[in-house]
Image (tube, rainbow, N blue to C red; front, top):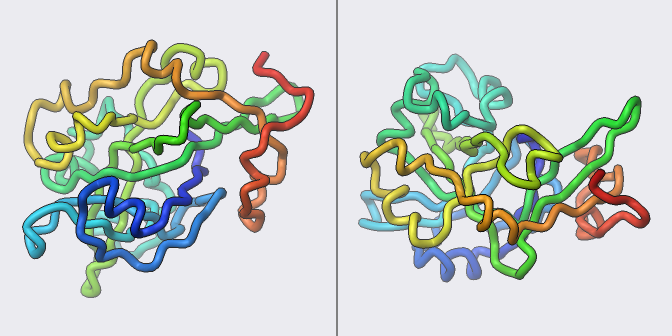
Length: 225
């Protein structure tokens, strides 16, 4: 999974969707989320005895890291190794979260040219990525990663990886901690993934300074292979 996605729902919308207490910073819609940006997530809070909507820096930083710079290289955690790697294993066992998104971007290279594609549900419902979180440093800076898995179905034409997407009936087990890793990391079926539109978009999304709804508009006269 490349390091860009869109998330535009408000605090009120997300706290209602996830039945979560809103402790997040005021959320700003972003159509071009990049590594180290602040992003919304949902996690379990002992203080609130349940789900909270919170804000984290995208790129998980383990508690033993020397500084926050490590997070820029850890925006994704591979499902195949997340239970084993020192950087992610503890968070997988104890600190799993849900990361809401409208869709995500990938780039396909054709010779010297690269074409951007946006993957998004065909309907209006949001995507929910399986995520991990950790708190770093004396100020307990919240950081997070998106778990990725091998791409399936038509998504393989765009990239060999995709985010691990969780339907609503799997949210409770994901947030609970513990559990059977193989079942927790099970990807959606190819049939379920048919509901995700693969949309060619313009090149502007490649520049992190660009951020607006025009970035997800379909590009004219471009098809997927």
